Image 1 (cartoon, rainbow, N blue to C red):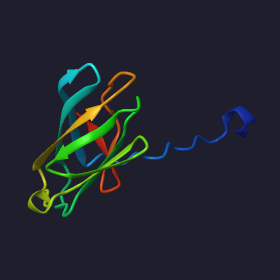
Image 2 (cartoon, one colour; image 1 turned 60 degrees about the vertical axis):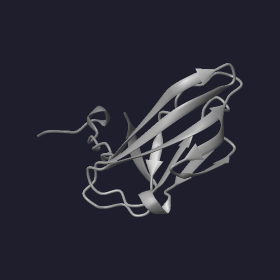
Image 3 (tube, one colour; image 1 turned 45 degrees about the vertical axis):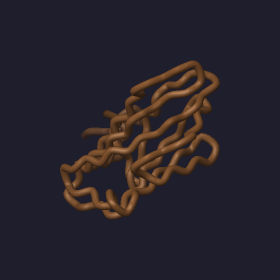
Amino acid sequence: MLRQTASQAPVKAAPSVEAATCVVRFSVTDQWNDGFTAGVAITNKGSGTLSPWTLSWTFTAGQRVTHGWDGQYRQSGTRVTVNAESYNATLAPGATVSTGLNGAFDRGNPAPTAFTLNGARCDAG
């Protein structure tokens, strides 16, 4: 007769992690003493068209957006949200849309590494 001991408790499967359906590439293209310019490229890896789209991330070193283009930028504390403009609101499967910003910083300028697109997690590219 086989007996189960406490050390042989059934193993629970780890919760599955849903694959990201987007990739965001945040690249600092210019930087000076207290400011920077960055490009943001968003690629839709999903099977559905996103229209409109909203991208969000958190700055980790107190950076501030001073001006943005090809998107409507808003910042609350460290959280940045970019809403699509009317002319780039549709992001088809496999397509990429680009936006950019000028920003300021006091304590360094590490690039963000976690993004969400319409509330879903994106991979950082």
